[in-house]
Length: 444
Image 1 (tube, helix red, strand yellow):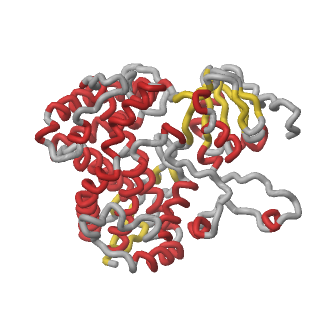
Image 2: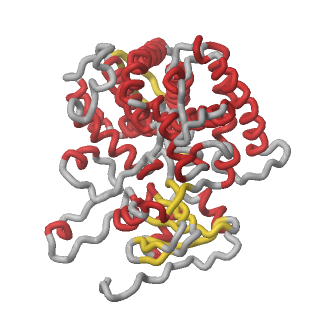
Image 3: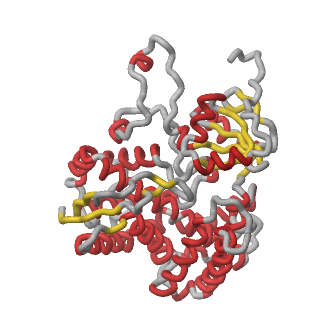
């Protein structure tokens, strides 16, 4: 674009009420992709009366994340209600930063070192269960149970019936996060609101018992906001509900998608096992948090990056503009909700100039090939846990769990897919195999 020209007008789909667009958004995995192909890397549509700007590609995403105070956090109404008005995802500015700093202590490097030995124990428990099962096991459900056990048992310190009761209500709550926020009797959203009330009551009791529990809640002791005022119990309870989500749903989805990808691509599993044979299991308690980091396990890291690129645990993240912005040369007015379309962006790279070496060997970003991450730039912008100052709080814990689970399971077992199952992904609230990823196990 000529530097003396102004930004281009914002392309629009022409949707008015957005009912049909909303139905397509929830039902069509290629919703954003088809519209990007028609309108370019920045376009606006309407979903149930809400104008929404979709963006993809490094240029637009970099412009958005560099906007500073030109953007603020935003989530759909269903998420805002189910997380609560005090939740840090519904706050901006100093109120957001203060709560993020307090809750972030639960995911610090020191906290991860504390949690790691118990996570290793949970991996071994799952490996033993799979090894002794006499019928195919739905691995996706076991990954959900594992991820929840980490956040509820290892972080919050809950055991037995307390953890199990929390899990039942949390599953009900999670299923309605991205839904139409109408609390009609018997609807998923109404059931989720009722589950939320029970969850908050249980989490309040967790806070009251924190000194007697074995998790990491002592790390929150004395958490102050930026004005030096202690956070209230009601405030902290909503932050605990958020960390359950931050440390659970995305992790469970990523683990299920990673195991599915390996089972569908045996040559990649063989390639990965060559590296895994050089890695110890179990790691020592002192080394568990870093034993399989990218420097020590580059092929494992490449696998994780490729799975998160092709099947990010959330389809996108949101911001709202507080002033006019220019994103990839397109004018976006103030007050617009912007969704970074991760799934579409991760498969997109701008056309290289004609006649260049890159043009002669175009990237194939629709193919599962972890090795690309060991060969230099992939051409895609990878932000599976969001970006900027609102990056997912549970990112470091999720990455640690994924690495420990992959090494621990594959060092002990060989898994194979059961026949006659649907391996396609359902996308909401997060990608997971439709039939649960049924597997059989035998010793490695």
